[in-house]
Length: 397
Image (cartoon, rainbow, N blue to C red):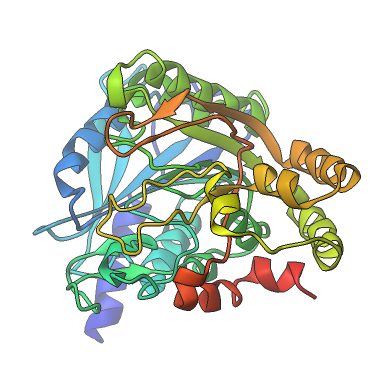
């Protein structure tokens, strides 16, 4: 028998043995939900993965739903884990290994697509969610920064690596290609700089909601709230939006009680349904407005990165507040129209007054919930890459 087929047959049987539970308590009248937690941690985040899995375990309560964890840590074979217990029969939650894989690149479209396909096929549900945890830098493609090993794109894997830095990065278009249309009710980015208009537009056909950060998301990510707030993501007795707002608010409330640089967050919940309308209206405005911004103009627009903190050169911002930009370049009437469309997209947002204060941070005076890139002369290569994004193409007919 073909070894590859034997492996997949064994994997399928192993999955199948875990589908049925004799747990008591779930309401059969409620829709079911399966959430995939994708821990792409074969990188500098590897040391945090044990805490991540443990906090997820502590927060698990069985309600007839499923939580599958794809775990790829450094110096260890990737695994697929299932949260179990948390019920009348087995009150203490536990983690079960349901599959082990040979060494593979978690920052590849093939692996992400396979994990999604396996879980959806073998753990069918009425609703699906994805938590993606890794390094990220929004729409930036691998290899377009002055130091490409710092770009981080979406996910990063150090084994095997394809860049000069010895790493592999998944670009936004690859991430999108791995997800079937209409697959997810929500995607939570436990990653940095993912609240870009470019990201939300690319994912508009893949997920209904996105929870993401305009700036970085400080380690250990959502771990501090999983213990008490993971349950929100599985409460199918209320709307997806209500559940996500409850989860996001819990994270903001926790962060806002911290001190110093740890009191830093810029989180927003985005409804992707409105992205086409925003792109259309923006595309109607751009031919009639002045896009010529000098260095001082750009410097006065709210940004959400910390230039020079990532080994990047030149040290100039790349992530700007979308509405703050529109306020500078559009007429009052056009700005009002854009703001109205934004209100349909950004259903919740919260930010602390400062971000990473004392560590090349910045004050947060504007936070619309979406960021955008502004072309600058110092980023000739990045400008060229930006013009190939779906958002740019849609808004520059």
